[in-house]
Amino acid sequence: LMFERGFNRFFDGILSISASDKIREKRLKQRGWSLSEIRQRMKLQWTQSRKDRLADWVIYNQKAEKDLKYALTQWKTSFRTL
Image (cartoon, rainbow, N blue to C red; front, side):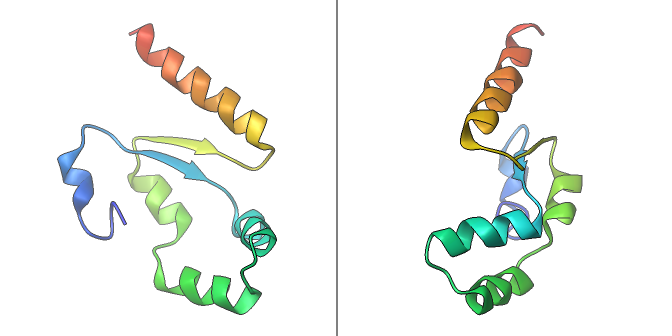
């Protein structure tokens, strides 16, 4: 909702953690959501690609949680070198 509500203007930068619709659906089904619930909510939201285009940084989270943690560590480390 950062972009949908215009809250992004209150921050210096926005990081988007992104995954394909297929991956997002799979993960939400594992949490007990039905496919119809998932698609209904996704239809009401901005597309992930639209949010990614507006974000300052994007991490693609297509794999395991350990891969996301590694990517976040790398992203945070990049700020220390600036």
